[in-house]
Amino acid sequence: MSTVYIALGANLGDPVATLQSLLEQLHQDQQLTAIRCSSFFRSKPMGPQDQPDYVNAVLSAQTDLAPLALLDYLQQLENSFGRVRNRRWGARTLDLDILLYGNQLLKHERLIVPHPGLAERDFVLLPLAEIAPDLSLPDGRRVSELLRAVDSHDLIKIT
Image 1 (cartoon, rainbow, N blue to C red):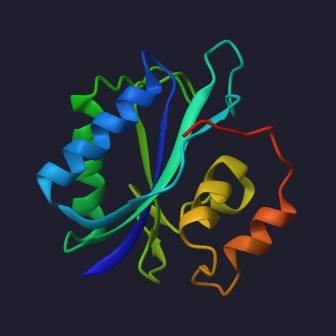
Image 2 (cartoon, rainbow, N blue to C red; image 1 turned 90 degrees about the horizontal axis):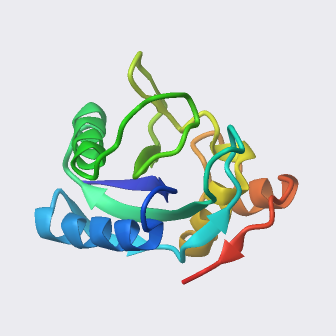
């Protein structure tokens, strides 16, 4: 079993209901166990601003899935929630990103772990710090220190 951290995001339809439904689905599927989810936070889009605000969260879980199998599983979930990939950083019904997979460093054409944007994104770092305040990345940097170093984009805690 490996501990994984996964970023959740949505900004189309009812994002809060989508993330809640996703969590219910994850508990039923049991590909991930010992799931802990952060609060939900509203944030401005990182990319094009002609889209609704996002709702973001981070979950931690245990899994037996290998990293690429986990990626495939998460992409299937995105698709089942109507995910369409029209443009980079565009609006989406559901976005699931593997942030950390145990203490592994992975560079594959389909997956980079730790997630390359993890250290710069407050909408990832704040919920990650909420559920794992003492967590360190594989390179030794602490999540709490990374959070203090990023500019805020006015996250609003909604649940």
